Image (cartoon, rainbow, N blue to C red; front, top):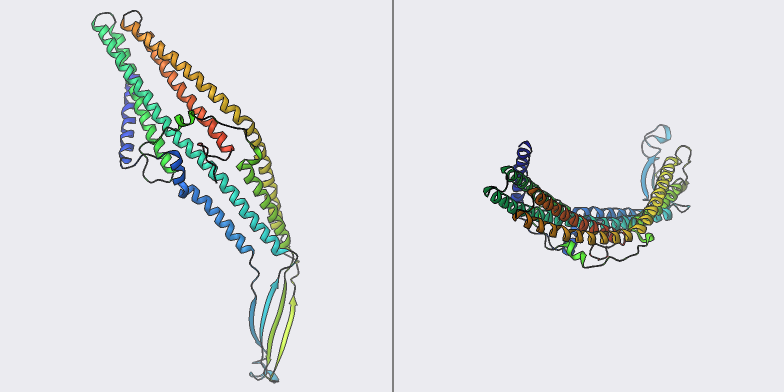
Length: 419
């Protein structure tokens, strides 16, 4: 009775949670087909974040083309002093223009680093879009699997209700002990609690899908079965690891880090400042041109810290590129094999399902005829429930394998290339 009480409380709690979540989503709409949903998420927060990264890199690249600004200065000398410099009669006023001049390839290296940063940002964005399409497909199928688990739980409740009716009839006829009816009732209550939990998990899955898609109002359902759609198509391979988006992003990051290191080394070169000005000599009532060149002495600041930091960034990016290459090669070798294994598993699960259904049918006929005990019927129904779960798990594993293959190929789960 303690187990029954615990399961009853779980039923009430999960039922209340499901009711609250469903009420909050009552004004929502079903999620569109996956292709449509993927197109609609072009402005989702995750995608907007990726696009902002590209815009930032492009802004930095434009700034890299800018030349140093000139400086205009006006100053006066030889006034308000003593002797011949008393008052303002001997004032010398100078208007001067100072223009820093970059040399040694500083500007070109800075521009190259900026352009490499844009290329790296675009590679990261493409990799992020592919990863987002992968996660969106997983969330979509996760909601569909939650739907199917509800269907499985409803079937088990329906079958357990029928089995309970048969047990009551046999008890009333004196062919079964009262204990058998209580066992059937306990089993039915446990299955009802599982059903309520499945409904709550479905609502949570739809809420997660809505959040990932950037929707404020949770979806109330799905417009298509992605599992059934994929079952009609054969996954294709092989996969070229050199075209893996994660590897390409890591490679672009390494190129950008290399360019930044070169730019930091060039920054250590001092800028030459050309000076030219116009001077007014009030005492002589004459004008003169002044000119000069200023070169800073790199005694204290040689940009060594920034160079060391850029070297560390380059070493880290090289390590990430090497790891990304190894990951891509390993994933490409296993992707097609995983798909084939998942297809075989799904086929085997279908055969198991057929056997379990026939076993339950025969066990039910035998029990109703009084030729077998209740325990055999419950065992057969439990085996059918396990087979249903195994079949659904096999379908989920097949989807996961195909989704992984599609991600490596830079495509969505339905075959469209991600750009």
